[in-house]
Length: 413
Image (cartoon, rainbow, N blue to C red; front, top):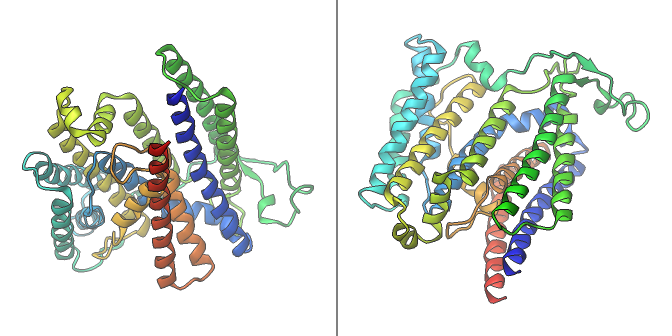
């Protein structure tokens, strides 16, 4: 009974984070006169904050295991500089440059993982040193901004899926939505198909997980709560799909439907959701973060787990570097500034425990979206950049405080 109560409590905390995101979106939509939720801004929100979503996936595992990584922003800049230098100076094919960037990311992760896992230097110190080291190397390589990168590479972050199914008539245009409104545009068939597939897939996965948990005697939340969760997530997915599907040719400015970057993000989120919930490595990460000594006594190779966590972080840093450089269309020494703070804040806002052992991919993604909506909403509202930093700092402090207070109350109960 207590296990079921704890499970319901954890789910309610997740719903609280989702509700906070909805409230923030509605608030900024009202403040900006609806500009925040216009199709072009929703597409831009995905592109501008892709790096946060990608880095948050890796940072989630790092924090769950009880570590921190302060070097990811500098790592993004260094890898981006290496990729840009190869394409701009050496005229290397962009596909080879991307593979090289991923290899450098793995090497960076292995370098830091070695010092943390085997030499037992605290991750804070190792990654602080890495932040300085990588930023210095970045400024040496990218002494000048390297532009005119190949179009194929630029399309990774700026390209869109072909419109295989053409445009569909908007069923709400003319009666629920005025004909002249930006939300009365025709719908992109490919985007709508992806959204419907995502909703069905989410329902199937939820049913499969629930059945598996019952078979193994694991407590599950009430069916009504599971249905409400699926309905709310489905509404959110369909709403975003509906808006993105209006991102079609013929609009002003001319836009293109589903960003390729959104597909990449979707694949990464699915992969890491599987890794954290259904693999031995994922269970070991939670075990190490929950109680390192107990995990060691249980036969978990804590050194290898720590090492692989940082190798994974290096890989995702490389992916974020590719996405960032592709979107900018150039490699700059100033790239990646503050990225580590956004990734860490996303995890904490999403409910990842400061003390380690607790965290979800879904929570980190919602936290990253909250950060993204704050960034874009405050920018559209023309709030001073200094106030933007202050507001994001307060949001982070409030999120961590609520997390700690809720844990103390649950212990007392």
